Length: 398
Image 1 (cartoon, helix red, strand yellow):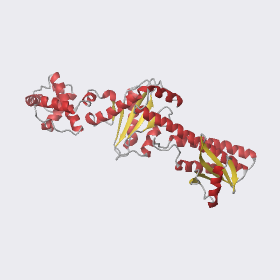
Image 2 (image 1 turned 60 degrees about the horizontal axis):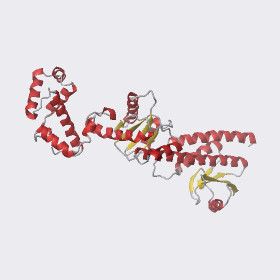
Image 3 (image 1 turned 30 degrees about the vertical axis):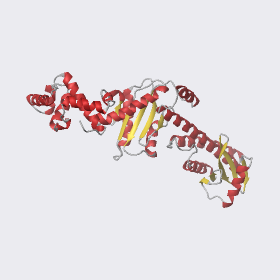
Image 4 (image 1 turned 135 degrees about the vertical axis):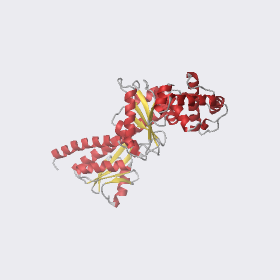
């Protein structure tokens, strides 16, 4: 191969390596408890990609000579040569027809790369390949640090001064509008589900996709100045539709309020968590729930169970709310939906106005509350919500 052709190859490799680095770091699921080292599969994909361009075979080994990824069967007598190379001061050398290269993570030796061949062109290709793997280490390390920072930020594990110092070090803007989404699936998340979410947000370097438990995926999204809650709701619907094709995967999305500083992100996360829980109690028919729409539900959710029992006992005078039949419950719910309007409620229930009045009178005799009176209606509505909350918490004794 002539020098000009070799130079063209180098340029081609540089572009390919940049592409591979971007593709890998934006499409691989990552867990905070795992080592910072990139996976063997990523190493395999990388050297296969490089081989596809250069037609040079590669092998990646750890510092003990263990093969991690390869595009060819390395000679068995290379093991001792690798260990000798590890101990040597050289960064590269030719041994038994192979080009040997050291790959460092900062100043720590991480990998040994072998390129099959001893020509100058193979040497240049090997140098580019080792540089690419080193870049992957840097990219993964940065991603790990950001992911770890976001997790600790969400969980309130950082002091205020540490939040701003680490954000500055990681080049994360501290004064932009953000909101937290929580995506809950009905099964333990896997890499595919994380990938689906990253497919929407992963290409935007200012958005973060992470997880702090086994079932929920968390998105910390930057919100533009011209975006509001309508746009956030549309984003949540996009996420739901992404999973809707999978009939076995029931997905709910909740999000908090928009915050203006990075120190407030944990508040948006807590709001999203509450929205997810409260939504299951009072808005079970909804796939998307916003904290700002929870209304009185978020207050009831924070009531202690003993106080709830006392309230229900006083309202229903020891009777069980479960004694209401389906017809009565339908009538009550429809009456509330129509803002206590008797005429509209009877029309939607396809019953005579007097029939509805009779049902309301009967309910008044049973509970002592007249739903046509606003204060009584509010009391009754809250009582029904408290009952729902108690059942959700596993407490069915009223």
